[in-house]
Amino acid sequence: MRHLLQSLPLLLLILLLIMVSTATACLWDTDTLHEEMSESPSAIELVTGAFARHSDEFYRWRIENRKALLEQGDDQPLHYDDIAVAYDKLHQQEKAIDWMTRKQEKYPGKYETFANLGTFHIHNGNFPEGIRFLEKALQINPEAHFNRERYQLYVVQYLQHRSEHGQIVDGKLLLPLSRDPFEKQRKFNNSNRNEEGAELHDIPERGISSFYSFIADDLADKTVEKYNPENARMSEQQTAAAVQGILGMMRFGHHDSPVLLECLADLLVPRPLHGVGNRIAARALLRASYEVQDETARQLYRQLASRAVSEQEGIELAQLEKAFQRELSQAQHYFQELVRLESAWIANGDDVDSKFREHYYQPRQDETSLTFFPVEFEQEGSRSRRHRNLLPYSIFVTAASLVLSISIAVHLLPSIIRKYKDRTASAD
Image 1: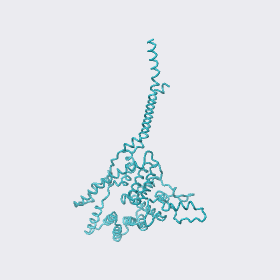
Image 2: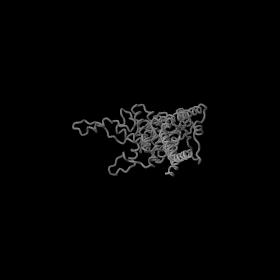
Image 3: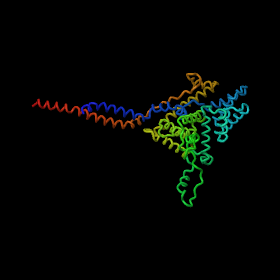
Image 4: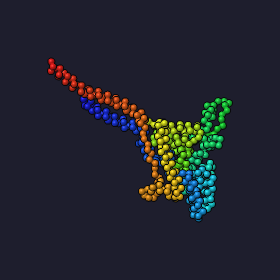
């Protein structure tokens, strides 16, 4: 017993250290964001918009610059691509398609032409024509752009699949894509299916309502007994490739597209306990809620964001959104500075392409390619959340202190009693 009491303070100290180190893993602070940045830096940058991309003024400059080069006799296929992509970025898809058609007539059969035409037709709402050109591009170069076209094709096929199952209402795509346009009618049919004389609604089947499941179903072996596409699963490598494909579309297309943001979130949370993926998915879904006009769609995206982190210990949507708003603000400041610089270069008559590369790109160590400078988020932890999470520590420390005090008292009490008896005997 004496040895146990002597070692008790050390045991309590060890237990206290274990409790503190375990609990602080749930805190939302700088380390949390650094973990996410190291896990998938491009996902954070793309969802927030904190990456080097061009302003509208730049694209207007590029159109005039490339047209001038063509008029001067510098007739290169890439100039047509530059003009067409610039028009697409300015949401002038008809002009973009026209310039790619000109290129196809002069330089027929190029992969880049078909890939661009597929993208422009998709952005213009013509899915079948977009699919046709993307398939042509993939026939020429199946592995180009890190398989980005392959997953772009998956996105368009998924959109077509959802439209065939009622996702287009009154000529508009109903978002989120996981939303059931006939939820009420479907519930009525299910409740009254066995009722004699009940008039059931004539509605399409639900269909696959997850981008992850859509790709997994395409890759799966469908000959297994009782196959269900909703239960299909991709390997880690297949999922990672799909994520990179969507990120590539966001990087070189429209990073704030609700469709792409939802598809990214679907890929990041096929399993509910993947902490980093879930938190990035919640950000993507929050961003999607900011980009839609329909209030119902906005609320549904927020519900999906909340569900993405519902299993995350110590993480709540309001807490995550507060951090996300700071990240968005920092990303906006970054882009505003970029717009200012591009405007100044244009006003000075500079070669804006060269200035942009010089300012926003740096050579890798092997000097074989270029990479973007990342934005370093100035993220700070929330003191109020830290105090709230520290409440269990306070209770434990108080209890530990009490036990420690009792153990010391028990250890010293016999000595105190002996000394007291000795003094009493001496006095007598």
